[in-house]
Length: 77
Image (cartoon, rainbow, N blue to C red; front, side, top):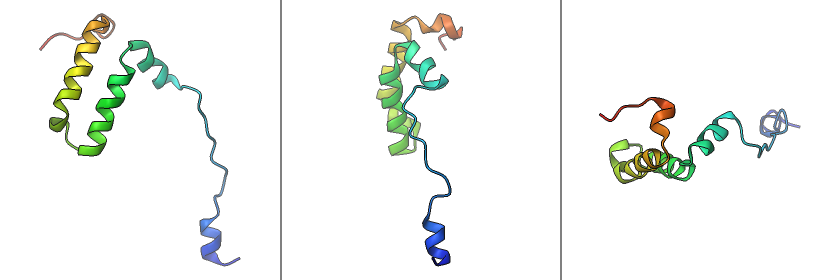
């Protein structure tokens, strides 16, 4: 096996963990996981939060509807 072939071999198998981690559990508990995912996907694609105003507004409205302001003690700016 050549050096380049060795480089292409994974050193350890990648674990496919489909169980929700602590972050996932926290986001799911807010009731706004879909809005969060949409907002993050928008930012990933556009690389500019200003281009994701609609997604941000949808997330903010969901956050308010679900009463999450109390759990984070956020204040309306």
